[in-house]
Amino acid sequence: MTPGNLENRLIDFSVLICHIASLLPNTGLGSHIERQIIRSGTSPACNYAEARSAESRQDFIHKLKIVLKELRETRVWLINSHRMQLLPPTEVEPAIRESDELISIFITSVNTAVRRLKPNRRSEF
Image 1 (cartoon, helix red, strand yellow):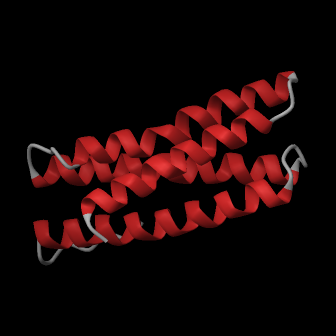
Image 2 (tube, rainbow, N blue to C red; image 1 turned 90 degrees about the vertical axis):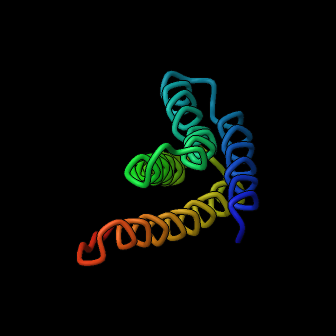
Image 3 (cartoon, rainbow, N blue to C red; image 1 turned 120 degrees about the vertical axis):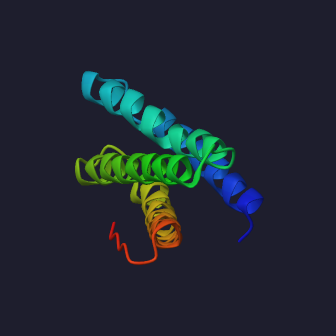
């Protein structure tokens, strides 16, 4: 997958998250989750765009770790919404699968970048 394709996939994920957020109930809980999931779910695409323009390998790794952190947070919000039955399974389950795939991609990317930074250094995320 090229960096441009990955960025587009993250943008598509952002759009999916915004759609899902719009389905949350108009309650205090629904509004809280909506704000949180929009914030964390739209952040990975922007942070990845920044990573592509990193000033150093360390900066690149740092920005990839932020992408990974935000993807993991979004995944938890999706699972919470699913378990609370705030969203229909047909909407949330594909988003959870996509977040899992993206997390796997970024775990591999971070580990590869760290390995290239210092050949003897290992990092597991």
